[in-house]
Length: 311
Image (cartoon, rainbow, N blue to C red; front, side, top):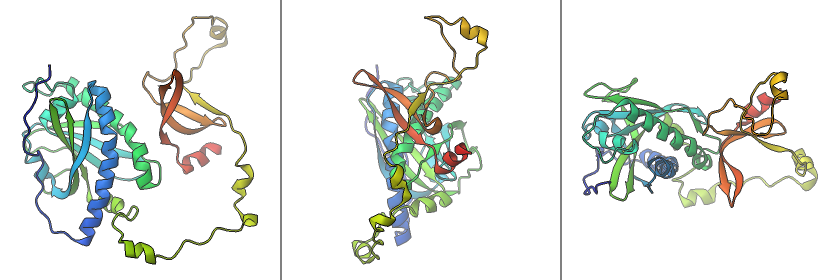
């Protein structure tokens, strides 16, 4: 039985900083980024905890790492989030002990220590979140974004993982997760190089007057000189979903009969591959829609990777 928790002060209290045009631009885009990233957190936590969880961004500000951890009692949990494609750099998702236990499914056992099985549960949930975070970020980055598997670090006292230092300045997008009788916060750090990259995306803070005075886009070419891609737009290509592969000897194939089981090279829950004309195009997860199987795309192969696959 989950016990209700009374509302309390925010876990992360960033220091005030002067407001500048550059600050406002960065804050606006990081808020968009944080909102898209944490959009995937609600469904991932709902699936992992088997209870409806809502997640929303409640604050974006530049702080030091000490500003974040200083409000939390150790041990702290640092989830290392690295990009696989779409961007460079990494994030740290910082959790308090209470938040870590909640994500690990032990929200009712606040007196227990963080054990290895808690770390494994947190890593599994974070990997689900990262897998689902790519599609919501696609409109902001205008390209496919994917993350590497998460790494979980537990730190206490003044010992921080990796090259983090208490004085290091970062941007932080702070999110609140709430459910029936449950509340905790998560802080996603964005270091300065990555913050500059995110700030340069789109024009979140462009004044309306500037948008109106921009040079108009060049007119499209005449129909007679349109791209040659138009010639093949109606070409049909076979689309296949590959659950996995197996290598077998001919004598084993001849022994196959109804009811035989073939072990594939993928584990249950791994993403399936979508092939177009026998070439990798995307990865996704199997879903059921109105008693029919379908595939929800979670990542798209980049143009460079598609070109390499054709060679």
